[in-house]
Structure formats: structure tokens, C-alpha cells
Amino acid sequence: MLPGLFASSSPSEPCYVPAMSDAMWTGVLSVFAIFVGLSIGSFLNVVIYRVPRGLSVVRPRSFCPSCNRELTSKENAPVLSYLVLRGKCATCKAPISPRYPIIEAVTALLFLGLGLEFSHDPRLPALWIFVSGALALSVIDVETLRLPTPLVRWHLGLTALALLAAAVATQSIRQTVVALCCMVFWGGSFALISMVAPGKLGGGDVRFAYVLGLMTGAFGAGTMLVGYFASSFLGLLVSLVLIAKGKMDAKQPLPFGCYLAAGATLAIIISPLLPSRFQL
Ligand SMILES: [Zn+2]
Image 1 (tube, protein in one colour):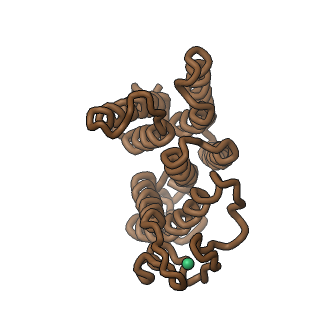
Image 2: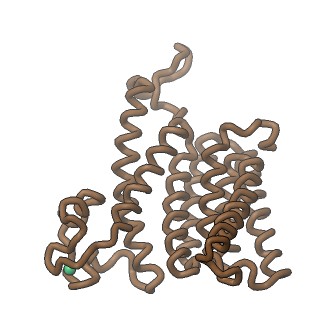
């Protein structure tokens, strides 16, 4: 529970702000998660389009890639604009990819789902940052088979900062040490694999593995191990299905980053179900 947000149940404990019932907190958090999730999703679309092309994510403002006209703020509203414009640019009528509203909606749903599951957890802001970066990197990896280094560094830096703030709030040194050990384990083992078997793992996957280890490790070593094996299993399973269906060549490189992101996120979502003994 976030200190000071709720009325204390014990009369001896100090209460800094007026009481907020659990139902009210859930309602406020849900609205906040959807609103922020949609806005972040809109920004992720900019990141996904511009970062692999070496463009700035800050300037210029969003524009139609077909007629280059700068979009008005009304045309920039997440999901709604796409529906109102019926998936076409207002000027040149070029089709707008449905990927834009899908990324916005998925981000909002992830924010809402994680917000409801970890509603009283100080690691929630770190989780929101983590899934945002993981989603952007996954889509970029599927499209380009690359995980851009500057983006992975931002992802690691912002996730680490938010986790540090959570550790300060809870004064949990143990959790910080476990998270750092998991970061070294996941990232270090991937670095070792890429040295022993060159070409099996991309440099981006190795760098991304440090972020995954840190975030899953903040939920315990057991969560990190589940994420570690689930991501490899997911990658293997999807590849085998695609190869069996003839949609993929066995020698074709795999966008492993998206399976890593999915496995780690899945592990965090099921982490409350893991036995505490398993968490180390
Ligand atoms: Zn246009």
C-alpha cells in the first residue's frame, strides 16, 4: 500500500491525507491507467516509426507519411482519431495502418491490467515503463530484426530509476540485491551464449536481457527463472509451428526480442501465484 494515501486502520499510526476507500482508489487508478496508457501508446507509435529510421522522437510533430502534412491535435487523439477518420488521412485519404490504434489500445489494456493486479505495489510505475519499452522494442524487432541500442539503454535506465524509487519507498535492500543478481544472471548468461555460439543471439538480445533480468528479478529470482525459460520456450514453440506450416525457413533469423518481452511480462503477471519458497 502506498504510504499516506489511505486512512490508517490503527489510531496510533499517522494519517497524512483524507481516507480513500479501496473502491475509489481502484476507480481513480483505472481511469489514470487507461488515460496514461493511451497517451504512452501514442508516443510508442512515434518511437516504433522513427527510431529505426534514425529520426528524432521529439521533433517534428506527427505527420501523415503520405502527404507530409502535420497532424492537428484532433487528428492525434489515441484510438478515437482513427475511428473518426475511418482509418484514412483527412487530406490525401491515404490509409492509416490499424497498427496505430492497436498499439494504443494494447498499451492502455496492459496499463489497466497491471494497474489492477499491482494496485498497491510501489513497483507499478517501473512495470508500466518496462512494458512500454518492451512493447516498442518487440514491434521494432518483428519489423526490422533489430533492437536499437539507444532505445534499450533508455529502457534500462528508466526502468532502473523507477525500481530504485520503489526500493527507496519500501526500504527493501534485499529486493534490490536480488534484482541486480538476476540482471547479471540473465544478461551475463546471454553474453556468454553469444560468445560461445556466435550468431545464435544478437547483440540487442544480450543488452535487452539485462533489462528483463532486472525487472523480473524485482519480483523474485523465481519470477526471473520463469521468464527466462518461458521466453525461450515461446520462441521455440512459435518457430516450430511456423516452420511446420511452411511460413518460416528453419534458417530464418527469429525476432527473439518479442518472445523475450512476452516471456518476462507473463512471468511477472503470474508471479503472485508462484510459491514463496520458489522466489528465493
Ligand atoms: Zn495525408
